[in-house]
Length: 120
Image (cartoon, rainbow, N blue to C red; front, side):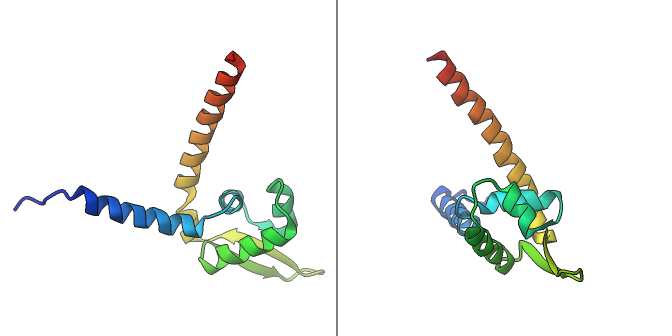
């Protein structure tokens, strides 16, 4: 039996999935935080320095949201003074390909727009 293609239903499912993804990764900062942690675990202060323009209050909130969604984990290190390190989870690491694709598109787009602006 041949399976029927239902474009409206397929589109609705994709839109729902995209909406779910955007709800989790919403805002200006979450993708940048996840991208940083894909490279190496970082302490709060390192993230604050690496993610340019983010405030401490916003970073704290975004880290909590990412932790709730199991994309990152928070580890208290047994150092003196006590330090906290954030690292990507295996589940969070599944976003690496998406992050690389978005970054690649961003490089191309930036080059295209800047190239157009230079011509004008």
